[in-house]
Each structure stands twice: as C-alpha cells, then as structure tokens.
Length: 438
Image (tube, rainbow, N blue to C red):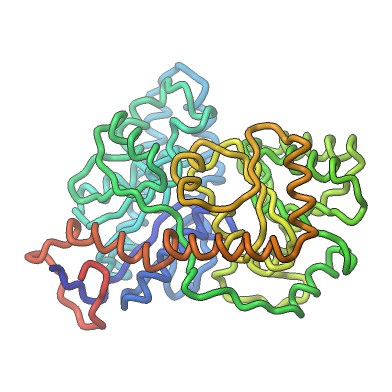
C-alpha cells in the first residue's frame, strides 16, 4: 500500500493548445491528478495554460523552423551528416537546459510526457527528454498516443534510425509506459522489448454535460443554420486517415438541403493537400462544408466569453449526428465525446475499434470501408426517430460510464504509481493525502 502526498506533476509535450487529441487527453489526466490533491504544471512549445503554472518554450514546438528543417533532412534520405548531427546535438542540449529549468522551477516530482516519446515530430526534444529523464532519475509516465511505425510518413527508417531507436521510446528503469490500445501494447513489446500499461482514453462520465440551449442556438445561428437544419458534425482534424470523403458522400446520398456538414478541427499538421481534395470533392457533389475551426476553443481552457467563440463541447451539443469514418485511430477521442454528449454516430470499423471498443457492446451505426445504401437508410431513420435515438444514446452512455470514466482512469493510474514511488523513496511534502496509488 503506497501513500502519496500532494505531488508536483509536470506535463511535457510539443503542444498543449487547441483541441487536438493529445492536448485534450492531457487536460483530462490533469483533472484526475488535481482531483487527488496533486498540482499540475506544463511545458511545451505552445501552451495555453495559466502562465503561473506553465513554460512555453518556442524551440519545443514541432512547427519550429529549425525542427522542420531537421525533419526534412532526416526523413526520406539515406545520407548521414556530421554537421546535421552537431546541429541536432546543440538543439537537444538547449532543450535539455529548458527542461531542467522547468523541473527545478516547479519542483516537479513526476513527469508525464504526452506523446513526445512516441512519434518523431520533434527529434531534438525527444533526445533531450531521454537525457534529462535518464540523468535525473525523475519518475516518469510516458503516455503514448501513436508510434512512428503507425505513420507511413516516418517510414522507412534511414539516416534517422539511430535517433528513432534511442528515444522512441527510451527503455529506462524510471519510466512507466502507457499506451491507449492493445495493439500498441503488443507492438511496443515486440519491437522494443518494453512492457506497458493499457489505459484507454477517458471522459468524466460521472458528471453528465450541462446543456445550454442559449449557447447551442447561438452557435447554430452564427454558422447560418436554420432551426430545422440537421447538423452533421465531423469532429476531427482534416487529415487523410479521418476518411472525411465518406462524410461528404453521406450528405450527398441523403440528398436534402436541410442536411449540413460541419467540420470542427483544422488542417495543416500533415499539410494542406487533403483539405484541398475535400473542398474539390464537395464542389463536385454540390455540398457546402462549414469549417468552424477558427471559432472553436479548448473546452478545458478558461472561456473567452466572446460571442463568436465556442467551446468544442458546445459544438458537440449543437450537432444532431456525428460522422466518424476514420480509416485509422489510436483510440477514438471523438467517439467517446459523441457518446458523452448523447449523439448518434457513424463509425468506420477501424482496427482498434474492432479490437478494443466494439466488444463492449456499443450501439452505433457502422460501415466497413464502404458507405452502403443500407447504412444511409439507418442514419436517416435514426435522425428522424427520436425514441429510438434516445434508447441508443442512453445505452452507449451507460457502457462508457462503466468502461471509460474518470474513475476507471483513476484506478488504472493507481496501479502504476507504486512502481514509480516505492515506499522507501516517497517524497515528503505537506498536502492532501492522495487516493492515486493508495
């Protein structure tokens, strides 16, 4: 039995800003830690947390010019360069100094690295983290959302192999590895010989959402929807693996002017070619997509209270139906979010869904890589049948409450904390007694 007093928990990534999955999941973890009496601090290249508890280091942003130049040199080339190696080393050293400053400034007891040791969007940051974690011995949870081998753009490994194998992720005795799906756990063990704990994404299902009809109406009005319009929400970034062309095809097949497609997230993380393709396809189908990413804010951030800005949660509440036709997902944040806000969902049966989520018994409208006429009819029926729709979403909410709530997350974190803080090495500080690890 391990008793942990209030810890200072330091979250680290390239970005804690906006509505991407890693940022949202980090905020959920922070809520759970803070609920147990711990204090959370933040380090990233872009941070929208309070300045009193965060450090924004521009060098740590994956969009940093020097980092992008390094990536261009490393990926897609077989060449090795002593000059490039020196540039990476210097960049790494600078970031390591900033990380040590962060740890010392906030007296950090536990690091929680969010995806920064899994996917090589910023190799110098990953190398710096590995060095700092190894040299200081600081207890660390490496929370991996997706790995380099899951992304074709990072393969094959060429001149970058030495960097990838050293830090993606590192195998260190003071690091507990957490993955979000069972396949990742198996592959991490097979490829790197690293054991990990499976902790799926979560939401606070113990606290149902508070619905503001005023805000829902304000959002729908602001994007030009009429009262009887049916809003189909695509709540993902605009990248190819999200399968957004299926959402367009669905609107085309429904063939009624009252059905409108809204996309909540931005493009750009993986270039802009796909968003242009989506726009061209929409033009061919005669469909107007409503892009609202500039209006949408982090639901965990302090509200701006601007009339033209809305929380992602408010966007979900304004929707009538959720399209989620992804070709691949590490888990499926948007799936949980749709269930949390009691919305019916179209899901393309991606591999992780089939293996980890579908066996739980959720009642969803699913497709297998093809949007059939039968699927379209099911969607049309559920949109128009309020009684059937409410039965469906109520069942899904109860299943999610059982499997993906904060209480489940809290219990799963409790299992790994004793490994990081053996009783003989517990920090002694004043503060509330924590249930995590007790």
